View (spheres, rainbow, N blue to C red):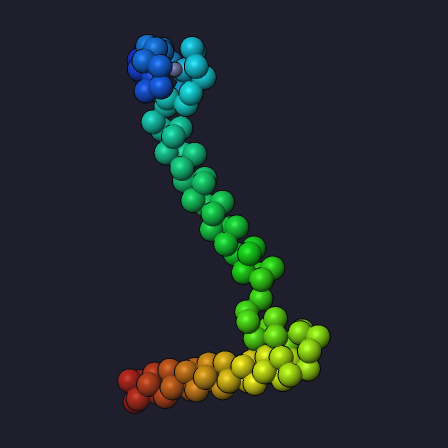
Amino acid sequence: MGTKIIKCSECATINKNTDYCTFCNSLISDAKKREQKAAKVKQAEIDKAVKKLENPSLAERLKKHPYFLYKILGWILYSAIMIVSAIGAGLAWFIAMIAAG
Ligand SMILES: [Zn+2]
């Protein structure tokens, strides 16, 4: 393995074979930076998924609303979404059948 010389972008210190600046401790390794960025993106995706799970849709929230009118509205919205997705699934199936036939 050869010597890797990296100039710190923060303080301009010349570093050898290190991922972090010996002077200011900033991350200077490009590979490591990319790695961290990828990890960050992945974490953001996870956060988004968790948020989605913790924050159900408007229909789900309305269904649990203490005020009955909102609750009914939630059920209507929920049914509408169900019907629309059922129609969508049926349509997709229909198109698939036509394409297959
Ligand atoms: Zn530095």
